Image 1 (cartoon, rainbow, N blue to C red):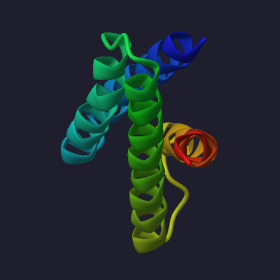
Image 2 (tube, helix red, strand yellow):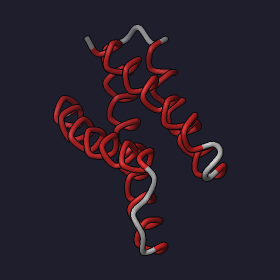
Image 3 (cartoon, rainbow, N blue to C red):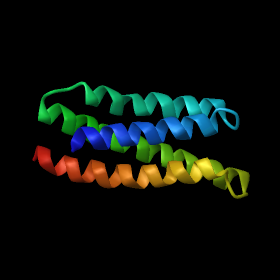
Image 4 (cartoon, rainbow, N blue to C red):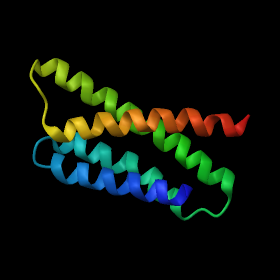
Length: 105
């Protein structure tokens, strides 16, 4: 189940990257690099390492959503729909990071 979550989040990040590459290339590269943490988690076999990738990947997606919100505030206009996808991914990432952080205690 954890690997399915990692794969789904990585696919969502790739879709977001594809939509953002023409609008904001630098932000789209950040999306691709931060989502690579999720991709590397798929290759792990140890449950603790998979949990760590889920936790760190969720935190990075939340960081991306904060960047997206700050970008839309600085422009004072409604952002592209791909930025909304980034915000949704970030909120899911925050919940995911909190959930998997509890497994390390």
